[in-house]
Image (cartoon, rainbow, N blue to C red; front, top):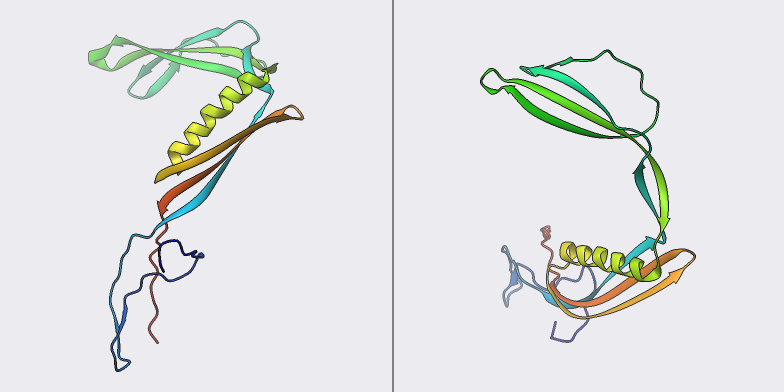
Length: 177
């Protein structure tokens, strides 16, 4: 193909088949870099109602004695309410030379609540998500990009269409006949 020609997925641009003037074929290994301009699209959606876990009660701390991988409770077990908890573990050396530790487990009851964000905050959050997507997906040079955002039915939509230059080559085995 020549520069400026259009290629489709599956087109063979480089092969390891060498044919001489008599029609004899030799099969060789071939590798190439095929640079093309192509579009990549990214979509991000951010609900204006954001869920978050908030504390819903007093934290409860329980201590354990740990020695050689065995945990011994230093409390009488009580049945806790069936609800979600945010748990934080803290380890303190009691006798470091003996591998004896005190573990403290603090459990804080939490509940899921939602809070409203405005369109500007949603756009900022969506742009951060878009930047993270770009870092993971662009393996080549960005030539240009168009970004469009809109708010619809309680959701902020951010769409990016980027023209990129990237290596589109794929190695495939050619079966001999």
